[in-house]
Image (tube, rainbow, N blue to C red; front, side, top):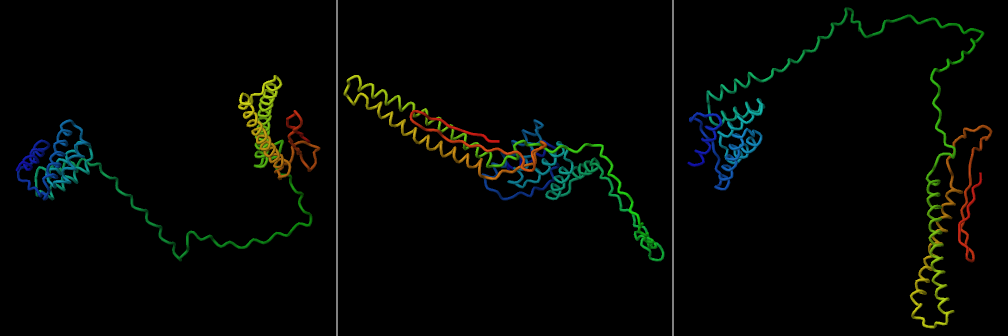
Length: 304
C-alpha cells in the first residue's frame, strides 16, 4: 500500500495523472522494492531541481526494478523537459500501453507530435528518357566512314625542338659525401666509442702508475710495513686491470668502426663538380691505437 501511494505521489508531482491508471507491477523482493523507492525519491528531488538528466536516469532505474507504469509517464516528462520530443512520445505511448486509455496523455502526445520538425520529402528520381524510334541507342556513336590514310611524304619533316619550359627543373639534392648508409654511421659511432674507451684506459693507466709510484716511494723511504701500502697497491692493480680492459675494448671498437668505413660498400651519387670523371669523390679513413712505453694515444689518417 505504501509503494502504491509513493508512485501515485510521483505522478501527482509531475503531471497529475488520473486515478484510473492501472499499474502492471512486477513481483519483486522487499530489497528491490526498497531500492526502487530510493531511486524514485532521488529522481523526484532531481526533477524539482530541474536536473532532468539525473531525474531521467533514476526514474528509469526505478522502472526497471518495479515495472510501475506511472514511472513511464515521469520518464516522458523528463524527455519533454530535455527537448527530446520523440523519446517523450515513445514513453507516453508505452505508458498508455501498460495503463490503458487516458485522454490527457493522448492529448499530450498529439501536441508533441505537432511540434516535431517536419521531414523534407524525398525527391523522386527523374524518369529515364524514352528510347528513340528505330531502336537507336542515344549513347552509340554514329558510324563515320573510315578516313583515307594519308600518303607518307618522301621528305621527312624536320623535328621541332621541344618548347622551353618556363619553370626551371628542380635541382637534385646534393650530397658531397655520397648517400650515408648504415655502415657509414655505424662505423663512425664505433670508432668514436673506441676512441673514448682508449682515452678511459689511458686515464686508468695514469692512475695505476701513480699508485705504483706511491708504493715504490714508500719502500725507498726505508719503510717495510706492507700493511700500510697494501690498499694502495690493491687499488693500483684494479686500475691496471681496468686500463687493460678499456684499451682492449677501445681497440676492438675502433677497429670495427674502421672496417665498416673502409671495406663495406657505400652508396655513391654523381658529383656535382666538373672534372672528377665517373669515379666520383671518395675518402678513406683509418684509425689505429698507439701503445708504447709510457705512451698511449690514437693515430688516424684521412685520404682523399
